[in-house]
Image (cartoon, rainbow, N blue to C red; front, side):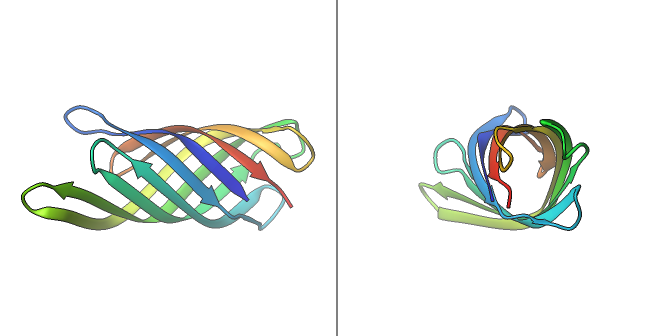
Length: 135
């Protein structure tokens, strides 16, 4: 189980900044590779809201070390909602992917903290932290 939070910015004429919260549940395919679903909610300015539902893969490079760099990628769908005064709610759905890297820092044998950076499409970047519990 992982819980994440941080900052994202969609790259437009000028960056559109968002706060992020998310959660994922991963299953170990091997000692280094984990897969599972991830949900992320992003709150932007005004009524700008984004919800991501993706499948996530994580590759740990040194899982037995206290600090283990990792690669992360995901793919799925993004739902976007924004409310306009004259026309009401605008909803959009499109494909979403992201990839990036981080470093898991073991706090105990099962509990970890991980700073993370990702690039994604719809063009955006995310900087955040993941807190997790490994079974």
